Length: 470
DNA sequence: ATAGGGTTAG
Image (cartoon, rainbow, N blue to C red; front, side, top):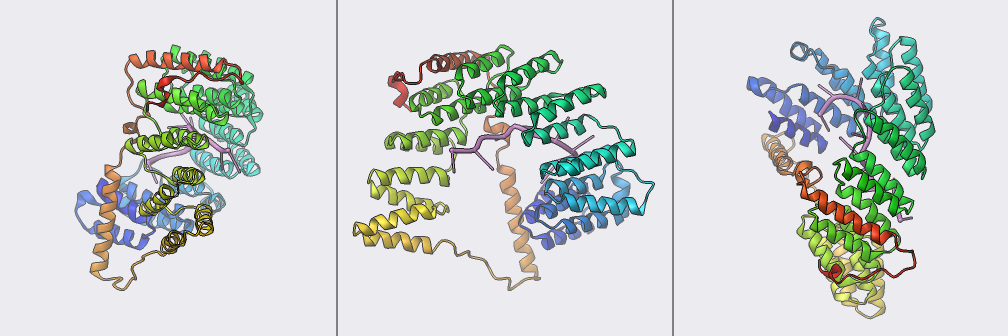
């Protein structure tokens, strides 16, 4: 069953909706245990909405509603809410709203649930339409539907994303007055927005208010504060937050340290960043792409090509493919250092991996090569680039035949196989269980940063001997 | 994958 739905999803992702319906209709006649279920139709609706075909999504919903078998077996689930949510999440809020109107016109006795109002509210806020969001609230009041914690959470998040934390704070008072207790999502949004605005005193005040509650701050709460302090250049306060979180057994994540690295990269303190990186490795932290991207960027800026190459090797060894940004940084550095052969090798290797270099990179290289009379190499690059954009699409000569259908199914099966073998996020290290000793390592790590951070800006950073040992 | 967030925009 799982495999079947994964196949339908793959076909939808590839916009092969006709084939998806072929597979579904075939399956309806088949084995009772493998018939399309609620999830199958949810997948189709979401895929249509995402493919920019909102009316096809609506037609699908209406078709499903006609099926008798559907009503019997899925009494507790509400497909209309799924439809509206899919439309709203893909920014077709206006269409969702209009469709809702047609339903209420047809049956005036039917009243939208609080969930439906929340879905619409979220949709309007996501596309920044405050006026429309306000209108939904008026409609709710008129219909006598009480706002719940999700309603308020959605509004708070919306205001915060539009950088209006003051309106969000007002809402917290309002919800309290209405007897709805704010939760972690509400507090985290506000603390994050205040931190982004550099209003860290107020953010800390919110943390205090949050800490009194039964469900205290979460990892996201602390991460938002660390981000805020790091962005403001206050590593000392950021380190204090890390100590605070460790004292309540909330271990910092790779993301937490990522904010420190981001700041160190901004001010060009490569040595401190490398130290932090080494300490992270020692403490057993799983690095993410962002960490490597920052470190390679710093090393390239400092023209330390050998160390940059080493870091890239390490990055690949940990399962991150070389992306466009990283390769570009490396090539530009090699070029600047006049190591042309190596740069050309990287350029060719990029194309071999299926990544098209930026036009700017190509332009700079060929211009320089020609100026130096290296026409052969310039020509080689030109030919390579010219051969890329041509897509190799197979013409639909046997459309409709059994053979064609089988090829679609084969492709979908292999796609779903890929989906199955892909690692789940928990295997990628974010939520990995960390032993008690990790607390100690983290403690050492943050002590280290604190020592470095308390140096005056123009002091020379002590160069530790092992910072070149990757 | 069934109402709200999470992640890092030069």
